[in-house]
Length: 346
Image (cartoon, rainbow, N blue to C red):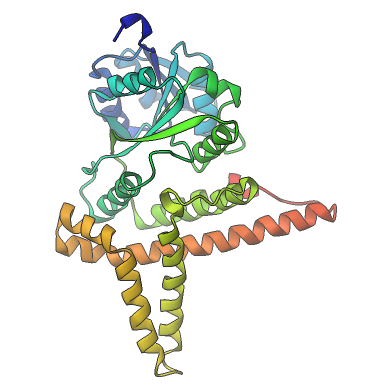
């Protein structure tokens, strides 16, 4: 491998109130081997603590005067970067020491490769049940998905500089962390660029999830805006969270709940609920075996109600998102004023 051909890597980290997770993120970036060309930390708003931590590590720090979201912060970091490859890392993840080498090798060996995404590892930083479940489920989803990716991932995603600027970077309409990376991926694919999911490119997620924050993030910042992107791009791909088995599971989950609610009025409804529940267990058996293998039987059993709840609120988010999109389209056709896309700022 000729040193002159190795692409340089600029790491870009948006942060706002990063806390201890950001400190661990910086420590890992500082010990990366080989080191990246530069680490650019974009402090998205008034956050003296994160600024101090980044400067203590010797990173290049940019302070934005107001909090405008990760899309704006990442774009700003990209504009002032110098690397051939832009490697976006979230402030609450910890990279492995060899990540930069892995990225350089991937792009060096595949000249037609425009972007690469990784996954969370199977050892989340927070030990509580909900954080372990949520982060392990994300790891599992990426590990079983097609390597020919249909989208991008901002927590651990690298992209050639020319491809990033050719599609004008992240869409700055997205003012909160939501689907700005998915949108970037759709635009990359629509422009003919190749994205690869590299399953051994892994980072440790340090985020602690609470039930309210998880439901809020998944419903308002993922399901609703992602549905709008799917309909706008006609991109209901059999990939990641949109696999056919997941769509079938949504139908089974709602049928299961409906049968339970009907059981006081219809005796056979309990039998229907039993078979629907058995179907849900069967179609998702691989993920429950994964949880059992990683954390034991008790943990795996505890994930079942959370997993079924995920299908319920995910399906509800998709249904509401479709209604919002179609209503917006109808009002636009009739030339009425519309509040379309306000959910991006919700």
